[in-house]
Each structure stands twice: as structure tokens, then as C-alpha cells.
Image 1 (spheres, rainbow, N blue to C red):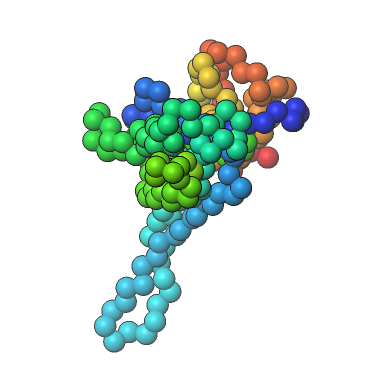
Image 2: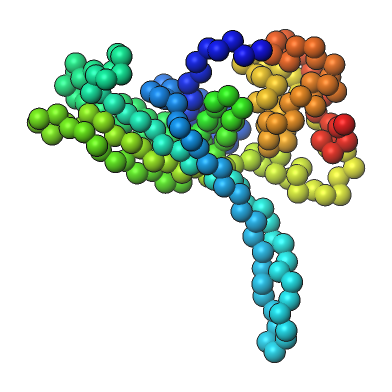
Length: 229
């Protein structure tokens, strides 16, 4: 049931590709929810052919991880309640805190942090691919007061899930997962299948009358999705 409560898009930083080790102070909530976001999917083919032969049908190579694109607004002009320039530093600290989550280098993994983005039915996991900052308004002394940060992220799938998805000869890909604190059915479904949209089918298989209230320690069965009616 939709209560009408305003939910903000949230970006969470993790040190590991299992998304279990949060970065310290690694959560960012958008000032305003985005007007739009884009998910891009790409399939790779090979078109190689022998010399002197006629054209051949392109052969499938692999499906590439999806790309996610959206913009983030930063504003200290005072037009948004609670977002004035009382510190005198404009949006500099706000952007630095955002960069610590999505851009800064993780010493444990020797690469930028892993990112989880959640909002409504959106649940995306990946790493930053590209970020640009467009400064738009300034105070008289040149301090930036408003900026739009344009971001592109590359999706990622945990290695065990990737192997399971690529093993087309596996007779049984059923998984049993135990609910932990903070787990939701869409999130657990995403971790198994790489897409959260199957959570209603999983709820039906497990006879869950209220999938929003999972119990810690409860076992959830995730069957091969093609077998779920």
C-alpha cells in the first residue's frame, strides 16, 4: 500500500563486491529526487569472418553489465528549506561528502567504492564510471552555491551469481537464504537473480502473505526463476 510518504533516492557506499562492508559515513540522500534516470543495456557480438568469405551472421559473445545514469542537484542558495549558506562554504563540503562515497579510492579493494542506489522500485549495484560537476550559481566572492553532478555507473554482479547465471547446464539453481537484519525481499531477489522485479514470484513460492515484514532468521527459497509461474 502506498502511504504517500516522500522517499529520497539513497546512495550507499561499500568496500566489497558482496555489499556487506559499508563505508564509514557512506550514505547519501538526494536533496531533490531526480526527474529521470537511465538504464542502458548492451549485448556484444563478434562479426569476424574468414578472408574471401561472404558475410556471416554475428555471433553472440556476452551481455555486458548495465549502465546507470542520473543527475544530482546540490544547492545552498536558500531556496530549499534548510539549505542555506550559513557556513559560508557553499556546496563544497556537500560535494566532497558525495565524492567520498562514490569516487574515493578504497584501500581494501584497490579501486573506487562499490555503490548501491535505491529508490522506489530501483535497486542498482555497481561502481562509478564517470562524474562531471557543472557549477551554476555563485556568491559574490565566487563560492559555488549550486551545482548539478552528472554521473554514470557501471553495474556489477557478485562472482557467485555471475557463475550461476552463466552455467547453462546446471540442473538446479535453487538457493536458500536466511534473512538478516536490514534485508528486504526485493534486495534479496536482486542478489540472487540480478533483478528485483521477481520478488512477487518469490513471495508466492514461499507463501509470504506480507513480504514487507520478513523475520530475521527466516529461510527464503529462491527457485530457478523460469520455473516460477
